[in-house]
Length: 489
Image (cartoon, rainbow, N blue to C red; front, side, top):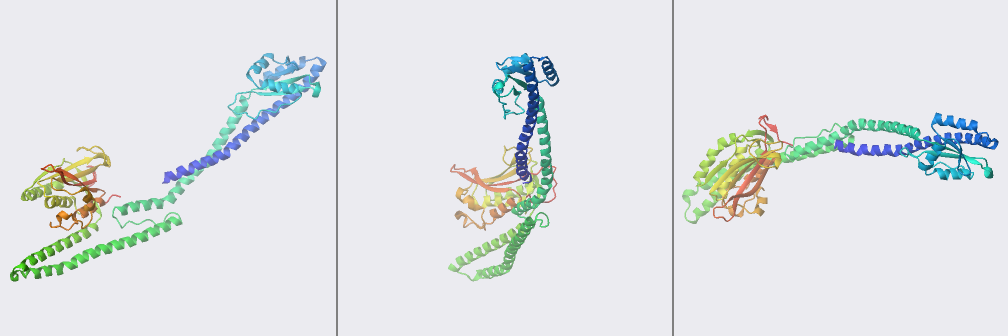
């Protein structure tokens, strides 16, 4: 935002300087050209008075010598012509050459022989290489006997104009430099609270509700905005803490009455006969489901109150979990395949990566009815490039997929499967609370990752695909520290 603000201010300043400098540059050029024209007009007027005397007396030797000296001194040819256009005095070759290269010369000479003094052309410019032609009639009114013509090279005048334009351009750069020198720290001071608000909002979106903006720096309006932001976050944090405390306290307070109720119901077991036995079993199952729900709510409130992550080696996580997973799948009559390249390191979510993988494996065993479960891991460079298993670049993510060949869930149900307490109609009679995937998705998202639901392995009967849960977490280079770090903003 700092650079964007300067990109807006500096072009406007350049346009302002250009708007002021362009008319001034035109005025400077016009002054230089007018001064040159006036000088030539004075010279040609003097030569016209001398030529009138010389032509009337027939003595032109002195004037011819003066014209030659003037030409050699200033490089400006001066010619005295009669009414027929013939050169009487002055350099004939220079005049004839100018007549071929200067299209305005015949018109100016014709006007001078008619007794008029032509005005200079107004379209002179430093990049125009035409000469300045000035003519003065010799004689007055009907007694005009000739004309004096000067043909001035304007290269020196153009150089003076360009030099003054360069000086004006350099002078115009001073306010621009001063503007940039002042605008850079001032805009940084003005925008610093905005940047801090942006950073705080990003951290808050990752679940860190303890972040507050600096309300002591910046303009008054932004300080008030920061104070309002902090007040809002205080209210939000208090509300979230009260909600978590309520869930935790309610779960804890309900545990003892629920346990007592279960003991009381189970004490009725020896006294039940017939239909009462069936109702007894339904009541015990409902009490067990309520206890599982209370445990899940307590675990959710406890883990959501922790917002730190740390790097972990995937090999170390699998070393403590893979054997247990294989034992569970073997007990259920299923098979487990683990295809994970060594050396992967990633950011571990709150509660541990192993707990999340345990939940995903448990779902595959309990809910899918699968015969085979597969755990794979890959590195995706840059968050979306081609997959490979060796080194990775900045921004790479590690994807861990738990796939099965079971019944899976429909694409329409996947959008709801990550909601809390949602359960598929096919799983209503399977033990569970509908919180596992939702809690895993929240924890993975708080660590800067993502939990996706996709198609799994092909079913053995070829009727479709099973279910897959894919965890994508930021990869961590081997040189990274293994100490706990805040959740990435």
